[in-house]
Image (cartoon, rainbow, N blue to C red; front, side, top):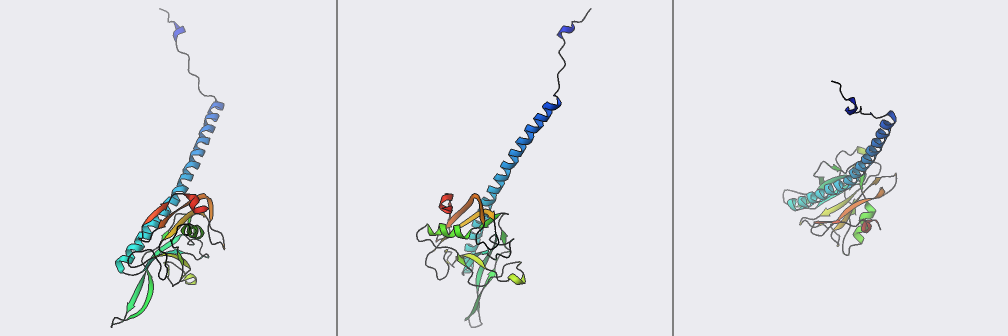
Length: 230
């Protein structure tokens, strides 16, 4: 009996070299686009992560002030000759009051209560934007600059007692610096790069974020970036 070969399936044709190269090229482009998207998400997340870190540190400083019945600060390193720490290394410190045997006050000094926290790479405290945002809210105070020596963990001898910015809480947990009338302040972070001699980081795009610290120490996010940058 003879087989009818006319019904046999035709052999499948494979990809040619050119077709394979085209497919590989398309896949490479798609992977590149995906990688860029992931990088942008990661960079945006760095600012959000830094903001969460800072809010936690604010809470830590406030709780420390209440718990010890004294002033406490969130201090931001502002010594520009230390590029790795400048505007991105934070410590919590409290004021220690010393007494003699008779109970008379003999002195005061600031003690660091934490090992220090770095913001994510490329994220910095922005002094000018923080001041501008503070000024846009009626009756809101602002952060302050170094007035008393605080030694940051890991500082070298040449930068002992560096310059710093700070947000202060009193013994009742209120966000107000001693001698200041206006409570609260705004706090702004930005993704960018620092330049030698520049007070503020150079912002990349409009990747900024911030929050307002009210008199009672609670925080509210700033959702409108135009409020910060304009």
